[in-house]
Amino acid sequence: MTLDPGYLDYPHRRHGMDHDAYAWRNLFAAAPVTWPGGQRVAVTLFVSLEWFPIIPNDTPFRAPGHMQTTYPDYRNYTAREYGTRVGFYRLLDAFARAGVRATIATNGAIAERYPSVIRDIISAGHEIVAHATDMNAVIAGDIPEAEERAIIAASLAALTEVSGRRPRGWHSVARSQSWTTPKLLRAAGLDYMTDWVNDELPYTFHTEAGPIVSLPINHELSDRQILVTQHHTIDSYVQQIEDAHAWLDAEAERFGGRMLPLHLTPYIMGLPYRMAAFERLLARLVATPGTWFATTAEVVDAASI
Amino acid sequence: MRQDAPDPGLYDFRPWRNRHPIRWPDGKSVAVWVSPNIEFYELDPPANPHRKAWSRPHPDIVGYGHRDYGNRVGHFRLADIMARHGFPGSVSLSVAMCQHHPEIVAHANALGWEFFSHGIYNTRYSYGMDEAQERAIIEDAIRTIEAATGQRIKGWLAPALTHTPRTLDLIAEYGLTYTCDLYHDDQPAPVHVRNGRLISLPYSLEVNDHYGFFVYNMGPRDYAETLIRQFERLAEEGQTSGTVMCIPLHAYLIGQPHRIGAFASVLRHIAADGRAWITRSGDIAEHFLAQDYAAVAAEAARYRAGSRP
Image (cartoon, rainbow over all chains, first blue to last red; front, side, top):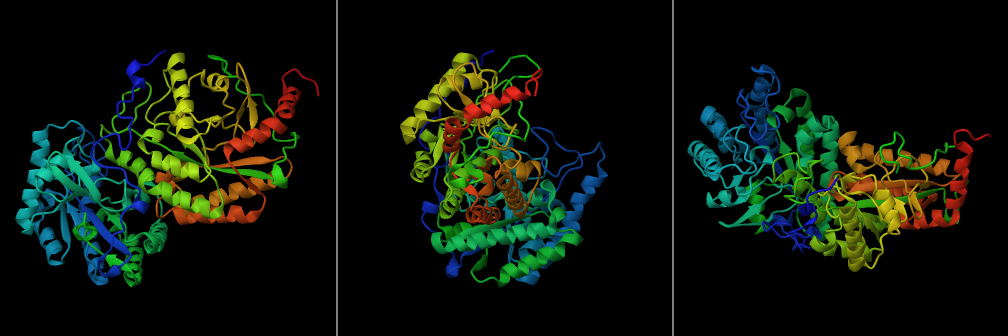
């Protein structure tokens, strides 16, 4: 047996990353960020609000949360819709009671199908991040550039029309990007993207169209990861978030502002048996001095990238 | 190993009783070593016919970004609490880290950490390599790590745990003394190789943070409790004959803000206990080779099929 001789060639073995998209940095040696009012931890409530067509698209792959049974998959189609009709409103009410604003990453399809949801988001003062068109719009690998441009444009158009404002941020379906996504997002006028998970504070991405901010939304702290993938209880989730908050709060004393993103999914967190524990978590975080509830755009602006 | 035989013939059978008494320095009963895997995964690696690098089409930015988090955030968080509690690291190193992030390699070296090879990249697998190719990566590892750190490597953990039937023979031939790829014991043990002396040093998949979080789906505090129970048992059993406990880690996992605090409590517990020889992989291997190797190797004869008690 032997491997192709090229398997032992390392064309990108050099100082720094193996690509030119962004530079390496040590978070603990980076210039400290200062949040407004000298707050220590920015808590970002980041909700993915999604519409899954009952006919899934498997090219290039099926997004997490998509249909699973043979057609017609009533159980998953309706359970996702439950999130939008019921769970999301529980979250909106919880945010209102806690007096905090959130970021809603939503598919263009939500604006087209349920414009009242978008109006409810805007009237509560939450921020909207563009989250492609619907959950079949997976961008990956070598997707034709025109196709990708069309997804970005259609998403922005639908959300802008109903919300009355153009989103500044982008979140890809399944957080999946092609080789050209950052460039196309920048070219579409977007300020930042939230797909990457390699840091805890915003940093700059370089593209042929100019710089774009990458705002990392930690997927390890998402309700999907902890509750669905790892099968932990809501009480364990709450404990983990509180442990994370305590750790970041202590670090902020030495290294400057920190950020704790809570990535939430209406059909996961918005279930009746989970909401009370989540609401108690929110209340405790609100009551903790040094905690700043911020939308993603507010974090990007305050970090002064 | 014996290629194509049902028993690969890696080592001799010896049961967990009546063993040669291993005595660690200062009367400690368990040698504890912490092994951060400091890895570089490539965004667009070439395909290996035997194993896929990423589950999604390239660029798999979630998989890649998760690993990159370890090198931007997690490593420094982990190294800080290890230093605070007096634990040196024994690094399973993607050798190309010496080029990509010499800052991290120098940081670990300055803390007195040991380095051993974990292949060139964690996205380049040994499966399918011919002997010349495998020699090339071993020579690359020895040369590159020595140039970057001044350390001559003594150990090997195969890249992404991918082996060939000749890996162990080759690393022994190059003078390496321990492998972390065999999981048959809680003590070091001789490994059969063509030339030279090689031992297996207990690493662990069972209490590896990757297994803890993504195979057994433990929460951070459950994983911490698991490590403490592992330690308590090995410290107790090690009174008879010294045991080894490895804590294999990945900064992109253990360095997350919801996990690092629980893990810090494990280090605090072990450091305060008093039964642990808190040390590095190479120090354990060296001690075993000098004090115990011959006795342990001789002991195996008792258990060979056909031998009489």
